[in-house]
Image (cartoon, helix red, strand yellow):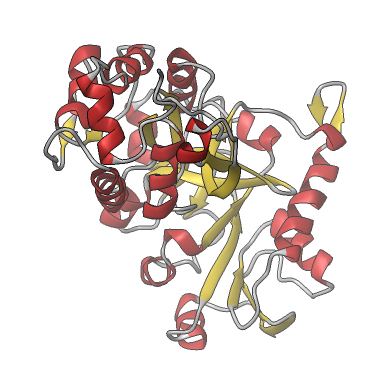
Amino acid sequence: MALKGSDGEQTRDEALRRGAEPQAPQRMSRALKVLPADAKVSVLTWGGEMGETSCRLAGLPCTVIGESSMPSTPEDTRTAAAALKAAGAELILFAGGDGTARDLVDAIGLSSPVLGVPAGCKMHSAVYAVNPEAAGQLLAELAGGGLVALENAEVRDIDEAAFREGVVKARHYGELQVPAEARYLQQVKCGGREVEDLVITEVAAWVADTLEEDTWYLMGSGSTVAVVMEQLGLDNTLLGVDLVRNGEVVASDLGAQQLLEFIGDAPAKAVITVIGGQGHLFGRGNQQFSPALIRRLGKENIQVLATRSKLETLEGRPLLADTGDADLDKQLCGLWPVTTGYEDTILYRVGTDASLIDNG
């Protein structure tokens, strides 16, 4: 008789007693082997069969930041996921089934992108690649600067006890943010290409529809942000930074120190776009975003707007941060969510002028 799942310590122990072998290390190694040898990735992992073994099997260098006793428990999974996120992991790759996906919902929720490598008994959630190699291909595309979309995917699970009695009880458990294959928005395609003005309007409409109450919004320079202000029915300083709160322009064309004084310790977010031919986020036309102001906001409160067409002109080169503070520039490097349409977000890498030179 099959056990129909592995939730719970007793069921797991019984499966091992019957000769079951853990599938996760081998299936994860299959995904990691797809990465090209020159992939520019730094791998953080958990010890033993919770990641380290897979990296070793794939010949992939890694940094182990913690470990758990074996066999691992759901609490170990939650601990590892939270620790990886805290250590700066930009994408958490995990192997397992619906129970593992549930653990990630509990540990990190929608705060960090994840991708599942299928290695469990129950696979009802939409967070898994179709096979380990497909997960590796997505990773390779991401590492190579491809436009990989982000979407919220449903995590579902069934009641294993009921399932063993022949009753299927599936339920929605939560959501995780996962990378998906790059795709254009159907409603703004024309001959396979984006219609730039329509896409910018959709980007602006999404930002306008998602503004939060009682939050300061620093509306940055550039024509894309100007369209956002137009959607809101507000006047805009095209080459300056305006301050918006609860649907009104509180002050216009402010400098860094003025912005810091206005927002104080209250909730605050910035809306910026890609500036300049090299794809600068900071340091070209928006110097009002000083190092002190950027640190005050934090990466999680900076929303970047750009169309896919504009990003594609970079031909895989990173967006650039040139704030005048070398340490901050390094801290800003990595994968950033970029709003590219209505309810459409992708991950794109941010680097520095130095990283652009190093990459040729």
